Length: 376
Ligand SMILES: Cc1ncc(COP(=O)(O)O)c(C=O)c1O
Image 1 (cartoon, rainbow, N blue to C red):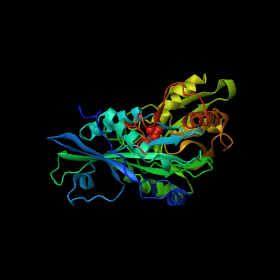
Image 2: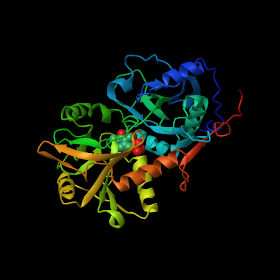
Image 3: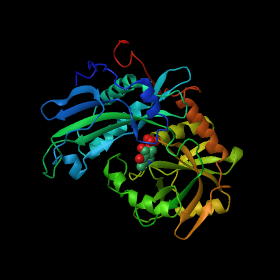
Image 4: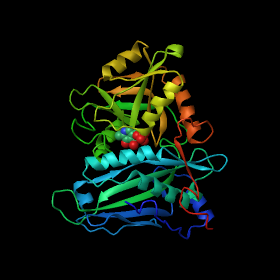
């Protein structure tokens, strides 16, 4: 691993003009406007991680027998880079994402990608493509590292070759520029993850299986799916690709809960940040299981005043209405509540560099951390 510190990601020539870049970034729907470059690395049993390169973003040539395509030995991450008002660039908690990436890889028997290498790759790409992060505070750069089995062999065993790629796309909020309270569909028909499975890993296979439930939710007029546990089908786990929080009580008596990490939930970096920020604000906060029926009854008798979902892509999204096959209910008055709004402002303020960052979550990216002097 001694090469890690010494990697030289050589800067590349830009082929896209500033005007073209601005045109592409004008309305960046989630996952569509990719930047000009990507980081690539390979792993083999002989060499370990090798051939770190910054290369132009573009198609890959893959053997049809590539293991990742057949057996889903693929993990990924999602994190964001922000430009502040005073033109500095930061990435939110890359070390935490590096740790989760490593743990996801362990679960799928993929060779671990060292945290230091992860952060180094993030620094290199964000610095190289920094011109793609617009001044608009509602727009950020979403970074997508992926690690997949690249060996061409169909033996049913962990592959002997892997590829790491890090790409980036420009994005506004996951739910568009103006967030509104979500209407959510609690499915008792489908589940996202099972005990002993891969729910706590960010692996590709966890996502394709959710599309059918998401389509059902859309048919019911809902934005996202509430995932329940797969055994009793009553414990609330997550919302789509986000973690959930509940506000019990109001004002000085408000307290926050979130479902515990039982192994079937993804341990969100945003969830972790909010547990810390809520405690900073003096809110009582606990990891506490909740059933769908407790959620319904809590809203009907006023004990639960707010609910919201959180994640890197969407930030914090309040939940206005819950629908199930047997009825629906509003959370509070159906609008964003005070605690949700306060936490949302705090998280956004830190991510945009407008508020102090007491936990040092904002990782600065510049010529020094990118490992080379400004060369242009
Ligand atoms: C299933 C699932 N839950 C929760 C989250 C939120 O995690 P984070 O806050 O790290 O983005 C994500 C997004 O990565 C996810 O895919």
